[in-house]
Length: 392
Image 1: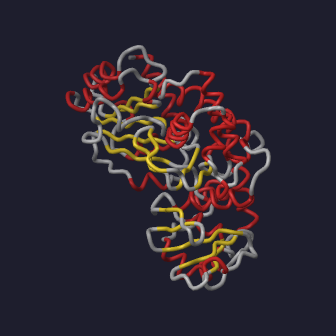
Image 2: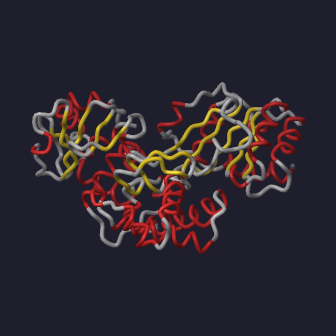
Image 3: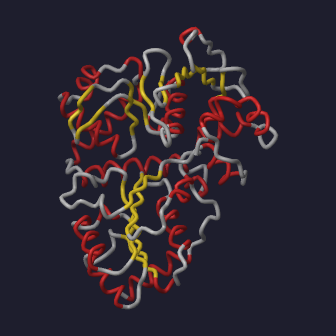
């Protein structure tokens, strides 16, 4: 226990950013068991430290542990720490712990202590033999929004915008924001290194770190959680590159499985793994566990920076649509649309394109909008793409 306490003290001695991610304000701090899931590198470890520091609990009564660096079971540690007066146990990398679901259930049922834990977004919580859904509150932390990037990089304190607010007042909003910074100049930086908070550790090494994270997600998390052999992981890696080279509107499942050298059912399983790991965003697909119930309409990399690592020849249309999806999916339902590109909340139609994109494909369609890249401000139903980066 002494060694764990020493490491925990080091964790709490680290500088904690004052800026809090969007998810911090959604947490129910009264819950006894809180789970923060998300892709590696999105800032889960920092977030749970901020959550812990929000409690009126002395640091000596908090213990941080990483599940990949413990000799005892989680319940044994919790029982022991609680006997010393501990009130809050923080568990990082929960997916590395043996029988984590059973251990968390035991702690919840028999130990008088609060628990915050983080884990991979690929974690199979819903398929666990132990039902944690009745005991834990689960939250998912996604990559940085454009607004959050501006706050961390430039200290700009800009408000979160509602979708309806953007649709109705985007001209006035854009004009006011333009007084604070040059949107297109900063949006270009976001596209290069803005979706993961570790850009603060050095922008020149950002792509190297991101490439390493992708490798860890595949070689460690996907491999262990889904029991995938290393040679099959290489096929999954190849699949990512193939998807990157595919234009979404030209997606052909049969050709994709043939190029990857795998059966269609295996392809569906791999797509499921990659979506669960937050490396892919699949529009239109409906999975029941690993079984695909209907074919996907479009497949994108989960965020715009992944294209810098995985794509040798980036498609601008894919980049724009990927950004739009990544920003709007947090609080809104998004579907493929035969008219335009996407239908949001079963009401709004959006067509995504460059600055010269017109309304030909959605003319005379009620509640339809063109979302245009490379423009500072819009007019009428034409809205700048970057403005959707303020939705969270």
